[in-house]
Amino acid sequence: MKILLDCDPGVDDALTLLHLAPLIASGEVDLVAVGTVHGNVAPDVGALNALRVLERAGLRDIPVAVGAGRPMAQPVAFASEWHGTDGLGETHLPEPAGRPAEISAPDQIVRLARRHPGELTLLAIGPLTNLGIALLLEPSLPELFREVVIMGGAFDHPGNITGHAEANIWHDPEAAELVLGAGWPITLVPLDVTHATALDGEWLDRLAAGEGEIARLAARVLEFYVNAYHRSLGVRGAVIHDALAAMLAIDPSLGDYTERPVRVELRGDRTRGATLWDRRRYADEGDRPPVKVAVRVDVAAFRERLLASLL
Ligand code: RIB
Ligand code: CA
Image (cartoon, rainbow, N blue to C red; front, top):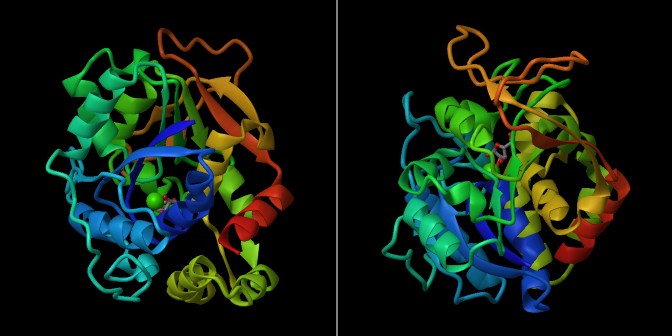
């Protein structure tokens, strides 16, 4: 399957690239290109981080394009307390050999969609600004993708930036509202299911025992994130949100889904960035297209498959 990744690397974004590496090497996944967006870090930093991680995983010929440096309608904010100022857990790895592509990430989304109509899975694991811009550039974009899998949102689960808003949606609510209402085949992977897959100390110890280049890099990049998790929640563990979205994109049978329209709160003083759905049996959703939302996942399979790919 052909995947176009949009990300804000970021620790769990980086772990997702490492998770995909063996699948790309085996040919099961063709990572056509990567785009970066503001969020955990600035997109130019994120692009160099994507190149650093891909090169260490032995993948050198995948284009990485820099995307939007700020949201559509609010000041930019980063998440260095969780991902480090360098976006890779303060590892400050050497510069990559490769350089970002000339094209912008939104233009890359439009160009590749036109080149491979109906073939690509767009995997979005950062704020949705690039996808929103691409929709404005190419109104027929929703017809050109096989599927759009998005890590984002929170329904029967608190947010992680505010009590109501999940980070990828909160970082650009206007873009998220545009994307979730555009009518393309979306599968949304919210905190409701990513938090269920939280990794514990035992999992981290099994990763730490790995001797391969990828396992060692994963453990190194994860350390800062695990400490931040421990500081905030008092337990040793980590939630690798983005890797679950990638795993469900590749093997949807790992999850159960419900389908209904999802809106984003744009005007609430306290609720801006919240993802909203109407679960009344006869809800009148007007012409808002439905999206698939993952509501349950095979947690054991996630933990084993993530560890196996890194080891
Ligand atoms: O809420 C989790 C999301 O925010 C993940 O994509 C993580 O990388 C951060 O961007
Ligand atoms: Ca991310």
